[in-house]
Length: 418
Image 1 (spheres, rainbow, N blue to C red):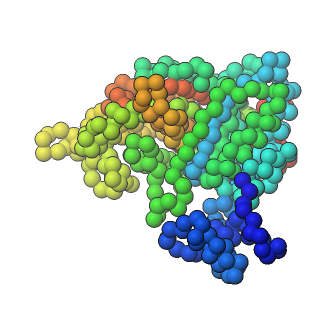
Image 2: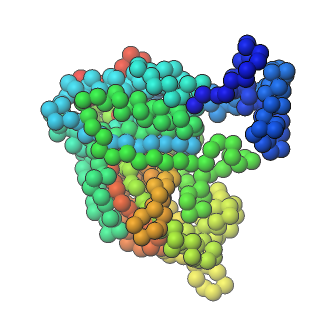
Image 3: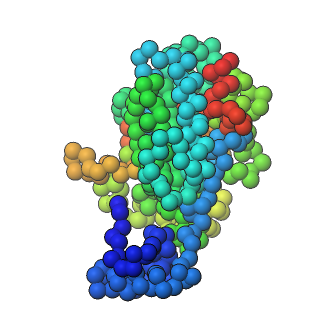
């Protein structure tokens, strides 16, 4: 969208960045277009030194060549896209290798805030904005490329769960790409670049778009909230934990060798039945979750980070955190230490046929082995989680995400050139 151009002087050149900086300096007073518009322009021209640079949100860069692919332990971004591809008929290992080379070159450039290939210009003027582009392989990828011998056992199909209402058309896929950024245009720019790079080698199978709270929207950094209003992610493993890498990443000595330093992503589209949930009184919502809605503290007391006292009883003789509370059932200590790094986006795709909002969670869980991370926890939730009455799992995927490429390499090179 072009900006209007004043008629005089001819040399007037006001960048959008400078104008926005001036608006920010003007304070919180509302500015009406028209009567005060000229005054704004005048101020921008007369006091260029007063204009401030954009915040660090746009300037933050995540490196591409790292031990583990970016987008796994990277802090949550405000905008996200998940997209799965199937290799086109007739495309095999050679075409897949060429595609991963293209995708890797594009991701490296865009994550550095630079144009890539035949750039669309969608994100002109923006910095990298914490952009990450993460690539993974689905189970069927190995059949289509003749690499079945290299397929990890960890990609065996997930078991069926009684609460699943899965749409096959929006599940699985040969290739998977996760895109995250703190600016919506930067994220969309990367999405379009990935789609264009696919060319004739691969076709989109499904795409999902999500969001999170924008950095700086709260007075201090806080754990994200989901669309139910609950703080979501309190119990996540943290990079500072002694066993974080063991839980989340395949070790250097792991097998197959091409998955060293990689991870496995379980992707689920979980619809929240918000009309039903929002009718439930606050006290009952907290019983379902096992935590306070206001601050995420466990019902057993303390703050968000206070360990749950699962054996604490109330004056009525019942446990304070109910037996079927989501936080209790999913706790690592209740699942033999099973843990995963949940790194989700919320989504809202309009309204369903019944008029209810089609909204919920794009659940992405990272672990070194899904059979020791996601599966045991989900099995237990499936048997008696109070939250199950308010959610519906509508799509599912499992992807092997190799380690980060070294300088001069592309993602998956060790697999495709083995």
